[in-house]
Amino acid sequence: MSEPRGAGHVLTAALRSLFVLAPGPGRRHWIALRAALSMGVPLALLTLGGRPDLGLQVSAGAFLALFFAGNPARERARALPVVGAVLLACAGAGAVLAPLAWLSAVGLVVVAVLASAFAYAYRVGPPGPVFFVLVYGLAGQITAVRDGARGVEPLALLAALSCGLAFSYLVALAPLARAAERRVPARPLREILPGPWLGRGEWLLVLRVFLVVAVGTAVSVLWLDPARAYWTVAAGVAVIGLSTVPNHSFARGLHRTLGTLVGAAVYLAIAPLADVPWAFVLLLPALQFVIELVVVRNYGLALVFITPLVLFIVGAATGSADHTSAAIERFVDTAFGSALAMASGLLRERRAT
Image 1 (cartoon, rainbow, N blue to C red):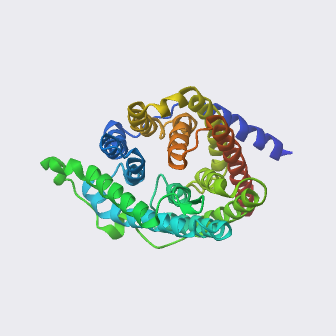
Image 2 (image 1 turned 60 degrees about the horizontal axis):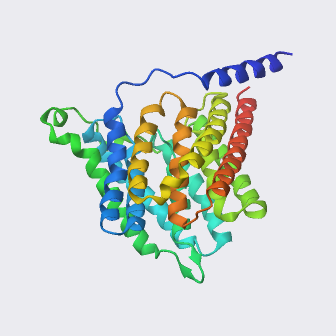
């Protein structure tokens, strides 16, 4: 008889969390600014040079700025090359496997599981493995075969992404220009990225990722759209997150689903800006800035801004102008991936009892 009350308590707590701004871990303005500059500067410069498409590919390197954002700059200098290499490897896999739908789907499962194991085993911390999955999917989308030819050659994409990663790395190290920052003690790399080690909780997270990714990919390939499988998988991986705490995924899944719903509506309201080049250039880093300010305080609120950002990037990368279909598909895939991740949380709770 206690289980229904427990379920009701979990639901009530999750619903309340949608409307609560948690205390932030100190000032995040500089973190948000670094993330925005990592995305905005390459996009602005290459748009000015007449290559906004290339600017978008380079700006994907801004994902690197989201890792170890709260660490001292000297620690970021040591850890980010490792993360950047993993991001580049995931993008390479996505680009190489893009022409074969079934092989790309298998690769999605493998990359998601291995990237998650890497993030857990080395205690990478937020944002976790989700961006490894996203960069795999984006690389596949950008380099996909259309009308018998690659949209972008894989080597060209990887070169652009490498430039973006390098720029993001330099922005992350910019605080070292100050003598006070250079004096901040820094741990060795083996302490920043301890491991590899997976405890019982981490192994269970890897198992949950595998189940969610395998089911999500299979359903997307067979009944939805193979090209959108990484959306479902990324949503599931993000909802599972990094925590082994019971019920964590339930609240996170609720935040992601409802946040995506509102974010899709926001996207439809501002979608015409995508047709105005400089409005688009200003909009993406602005969204990234706001995301980094709020993501640690309310995940659902962050999704209101993450959703239009991702939809703008995907739409520009694929050349799609059907904003309504993109918003609906994004919500459907996110809701499905989140539901799978929430269900996998029940598996964890049962094993823990």
